[in-house]
Length: 153
Image 1 (cartoon, rainbow, N blue to C red):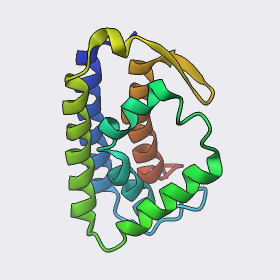
Image 2: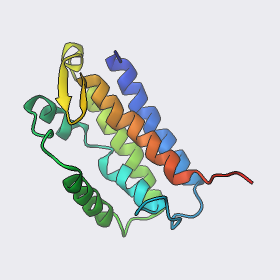
Image 3: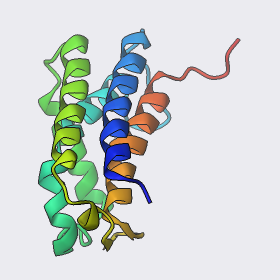
Image 4: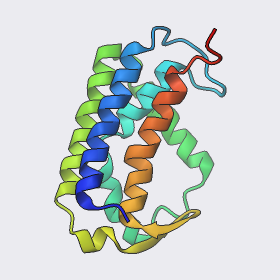
């Protein structure tokens, strides 16, 4: 199990790493292997980075279990569209600021509550591990996807 302190540090670290990857990605119009561009992926991270305080209480309620992939995709598309006029620097700052806000929220949580097992879609794990999936793994995965240019030649 991940500890609260590991979560807080990991969320902050993921924000910094995502922003660094975005700063080093030169072509923000690069088409990724699906419908998003590099800019879209970093905009998605900026839009979701600060969401821990809003999502965490819903984990107990089971309110998120019925949300399908279509609804998630619609929400992602709307969030990306809302950031279309933001500069690269503004998007990267929003990632760091949002991740820090989520980390600050997690720092207020009770360790026992973070260890409570809940179900979310295909996940059945401790709430802390779900938070790690969303605010650490998710941020790093999208940042890598958006900035990687393989194969290296």
